[in-house]
Image 1: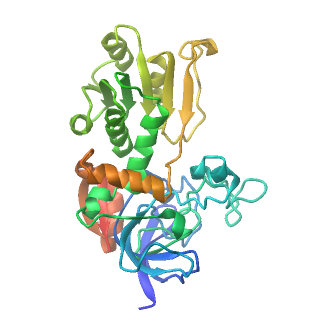
Image 2: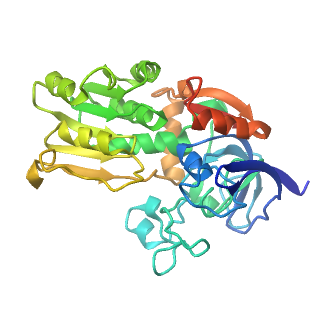
Image 3: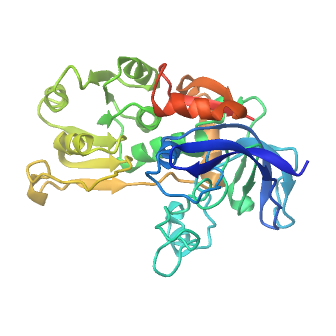
Length: 364
């Protein structure tokens, strides 16, 4: 077989299944046969034309699969082995990687900071479904495989590890960047998949009180499974007032913003204690305004920290270990399953947030 099925971006509003050539394997690559992947909110931005990618690109960036073929330089793995790779696949050779920020891998940018193949600013080391063919296909080529493949324990299902490549890694770095200490009070704004993982991450970091904010009661219920102690529906209460009451006016030690809107960002800032940290995970489509009062006129010793999903095999190994040892169970986030052939229907469900959808397992 020399061709495969793949979900291809055709034009804004159109992703369709096409036959594509199975990629050749270079010396540093690995070819994965995809067993499960999923749809991300970023993929919906691509579908809508809000994030530009080249027509004809295979989309998706969250692979679980089996090594079909290994490049000649890739050691320590074997064909037939079950693995994942992070949504962010850094080379570990760029200045950003060697400076300690592998997610910001700049090895694929031109001298003026734009992507050489498309002419727009690339997003760090995000390659799958951005500047190279992605994972919503029967096969995907993993670049720099030595640095990015992580073996999956036989006892774990695809659904148990499906969040590791992106959603879990992103949510957890939100908690890590929040500088959460044992006994802290933390609030997480938005309980979509990333916010739910941030909630789980805050619990693992030792937060004593975790406040989850969302407008969907069903998601708030799942947030309790992830570790939330208090849930607030912003449609029913004034979130800022409630949080300040819960903290006796002190404010929270850390806010995690997981939606990417002016409103949630500002609320996350307003409820911070002096010296607190706002850990931002949202992808913002418009300029942000920081009100002087919320920012204490710049005198509040606040920290605002942003992040892109950490990748690489060591990050994936650590996340897989958390799942394997039962420290976290994210299976509740996988609410639907579709065949790859039906991915257009799955996109419609996910993009319109119907039927309580959180994440969809896509099965080639």
